[in-house]
Image 1 (cartoon, rainbow, N blue to C red):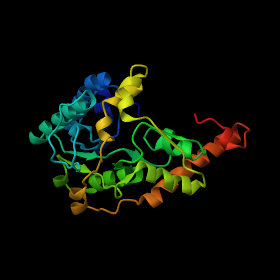
Image 2: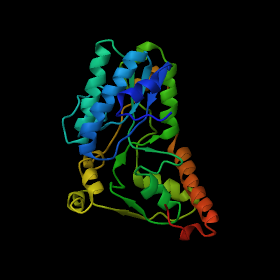
Image 3: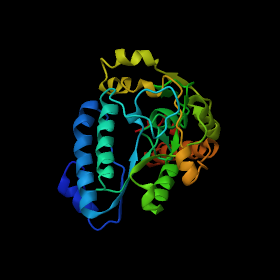
Image 4: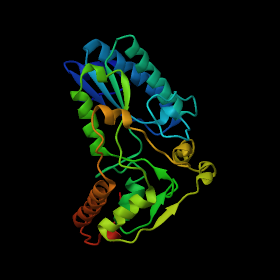
Length: 285
């Protein structure tokens, strides 16, 4: 059914009669939007969960930890840094308080940047593997040579189902999604290029240039705030989840070729639909 996350009645109606709800929403990538929208949406989710008794699995990110220099783990303090990280911290404090008070059963499933077939809104998506699949130059805003954790979307889904099947003792806490051993983005794109038989070409914007380019692009201005996630090694510790459930995340040697070939097939299909059998000449929409 249609549901506006910013409308309390909508959210309650959507959860009514459900034993579980999985929250996978996102908002426009804007700190000003997040500052207003996330606390309001979280209040609506919490009210609905309390009223209906539904257990919640919230697919979350890792912004609330802010800038760090060690592998991220679930017990790190919440940050007040920036707009978007601070907004996610505020939303996190809201569900944590409701959990402490016994009003909800809530499991936060946190994942880093993600990739997978059909996943275009990511560092490995429309400007990464989708361009590589066309034999074009990947256009990156992050360094291609910093180690960076990536989660495979089917693994995120598997982890969500794992929590849905778990007992109540797995709730009212946060969990990190298991990821394959951390690689650099260059290494991942090379796996994708090899899978579709093209030469890897990369163009990366220097991290220090984002603030300057942000004067002319609102999106780059929003990315500039998040430079701490890619201007240093970015590792995620999922030991807690591994000890309780499973740790065999999909290897990049499996997930990246599937993703690259899916982008290639999608481009080829669009080329055929447009009457152009040369996918390299078809613009990515």
